[in-house]
Image (cartoon, rainbow, N blue to C red; front, side, top):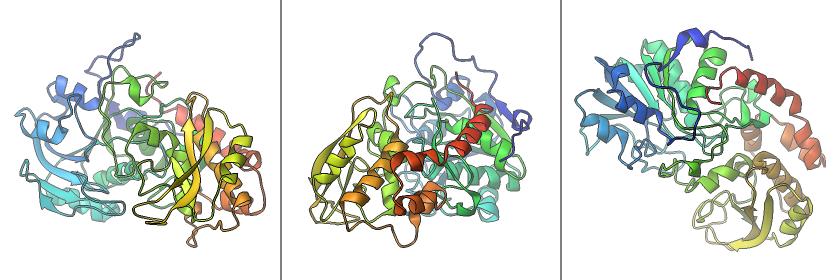
Length: 406
């Protein structure tokens, strides 16, 4: 990872708008501030927007509908990511190419497209400016930040301007946690070496991508929020929560996700097919010993309840399984990644049926083979989490250069 300040020259933050004040003011997203300024940043431009159902206003209208009706902005195309622009597709799916019934705008599919293929989509759309506005959840393996990365790269290849409208990191931006991806494990759940819980907003990530990872910087502009501080949780705002994907129903899900999503790399259910995905974990043959073992660790801010549930889809569909439910009682001290590692270590000890997914998906999620091999070798929670501290410290130093909020 190279430390560079060239993004400070290649990227512009919308300076015409007033900066966030020192007092606790109402939060306004990047879009709200863009609209309040009369869309001056987009004046005279043919605009396409990368968004999904989370691209909403404070009064729960979709920004595409708002922009389409406003003569001050020329919105000509929409680009849909995984799950689609209107959010009709499940995990690993998209909506394809169609015309949006509500606005008549052409909707282009970006899912699993990158590089020249995605640049060709931007070129075919006829836009000269690509806008990005999607709610993130703060985890490296949540694919929308890599949609951001791929779209930035493609916009540069196609010669398009790129504008990021910022939204809160729902689990705060206080600090980065967890292992940093090793480049040889790069996939769509992690393109570049950032921490598993990155502690950044999408605008900050865009500046990081532009300054550290893109081979050539895109013409980047960011519209920041007002009224947001790094210590703010999502419920500090008055923004409605719209699930960014079908299995991210609440901000509570986002709170645990950067740790318990690692169970996607195992034969243990991560709670898909329940009303509390990523908070409920379990498998056939697991009993109360798992919750007891996890509680013995006295992890900060969290307790574990013996739980039984029957997923309606995904792993163990229609079968009753045993496991744990995560109850975070003090989110200020809760560490989701450390908790996720502790749960992996303890379930392997108490349940003889534990296994990793045969495709080593855990390596892609954690960014290396280290977590898998250390746990297989009998390492405990402290030993596993201690192994990535040097690389995490290095990432934190780089990350600091790109933070935009106090």
